[in-house]
Length: 309
Image (cartoon, rainbow, N blue to C red):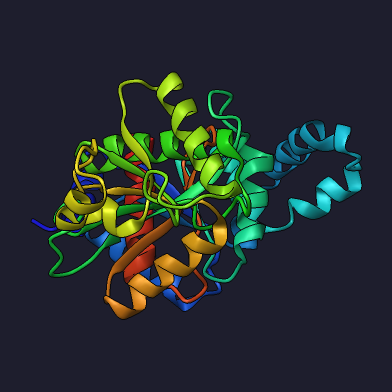
């Protein structure tokens, strides 16, 4: 059974309610129809007409209380909650839904802003990040062609501590959703001192922090991507390496590297890219690429549902 089928089947095992905030998008409507028909989740297609006045007023007051210290006025809160995206996020916050998915017609900053402001950041992590589940056909690397790429959507220039928490968040998603052992590589243009530079030092420090925080995780760095995922290269470049060229979780040193890499692999290797899945928040939610397909939406809903189980 391939990774995507496994994800959809796991979602079916414990149905969760996921709200979709972009009813005007035909792809979202079709995805919701299939999700309901195949019993993957209980989708709510949220339109402005479906926003309950009593709940909206409660959400406005709650959102105002959350944001007034940032200078938000009650009128601004009221205007914000006219947007289905924010209403969906507040539904999730208030347990009227188990998670939300958006991004087919919103930018990533729009979705991330709503998620952070309404759901809040998990105090254990202290930051929001994102990842993709990448499923590469006919690929012997990773976990039979399955990888996690992180962060590809949120933090432009993570420092060492942020990289550590990105790695930890990605590892937790692997254990929750994919049921295999995360083997984490902190990527760089250097493999164990083959090159020098500020960014190399930041990755080294990230490894140290991650090991201190989570000594149970199988993680190594700094590694070039070929030394991380190709055993033959790992034996040449880093023969004593912990991962042995079998990494399945790839942590990129910055957003440029992560975003470019996932899109290249998706388009050139015809990989399935599930995400961006937003990590480090108090409730599960997922962003979508505005170029997403119906299947992409279904898969994001399935992962979000599993995370809510």
